[in-house]
Length: 370
Image (cartoon, rainbow, N blue to C red; front, side, top):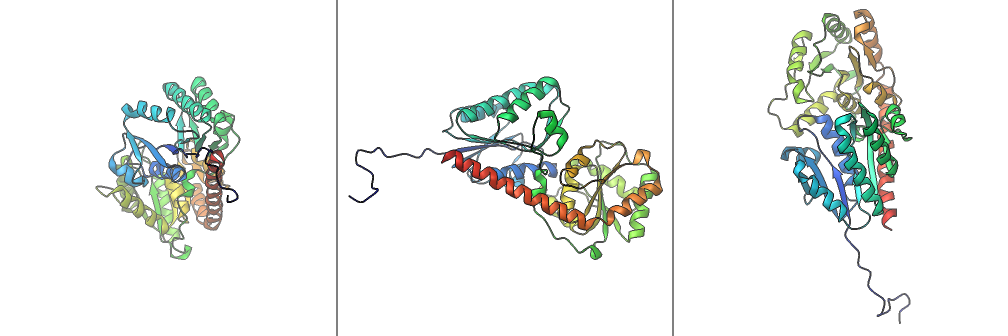
């Protein structure tokens, strides 16, 4: 008998199929949301024989934006939540559950949702599987929802936070870059060839006043930059049009453009920008990945952007213009333009950290199934 051969009486070990669950909800009209959901999906792809994705009300174009692989079992609408839970509960041993990256609302209306998420986490851990919570931030915490969320996070092998404040609220320890920084570094144009100052602001906030407009226009003129306004979230389109009129800039509409094409167009714009001004975090993340300097210049900033960029070592990118006059705003903006090398270095480090975390996640899953 050959050494190491299996005895005829020895039962054949049958390998059971494995299953990964990933949550991918979000509006197709928000490229920042697509960016971070895609990041979570990339961590999930290839970790199991079967991929199950819950996309909520996401339309077909949302699946294309994220790059959901052919063969994925896609569950849509709230009516499929029961099916999702059944598949999770009846899945073979050692399943993988990947939650969504991004901002987590924990107001009173989310207690039931957090209860379900805690139950999902417990199911996976009882099956000796792996739970991954990609980089997240907490918004509007209330006691019970926060307590449930913190319990679930502590039961997860990976509970990652994109800023220290959220980590402290949940009793977490691991603060890492926002997953959007893993969306791919781009060389863009050399600094000397970058000729644009790009602006993209939320449509739900008041239109900036004359002092802000003067500061941005004068900064662009002194640096020899053309002003362009862009749309990364559909609901901001009218605001971008208004800003272009006020600033004497070029307006790039979204209109009927396919979201995938729109994302590529935006990244091309950021490739040639020296400075990008926005109060949308993932506008600034994509801008920084292209080598543009990201700046938040709005009245009463929330602190979310400041905290997320501080996590990768970039500070003093935000300024409250409600308490700043035009000359001070100009000095602030001109100083930011000179920070391109620092931005590239910090963003490169962030991308490397996220690549390492993804490899760590995959190794943890392999070890759980060994």
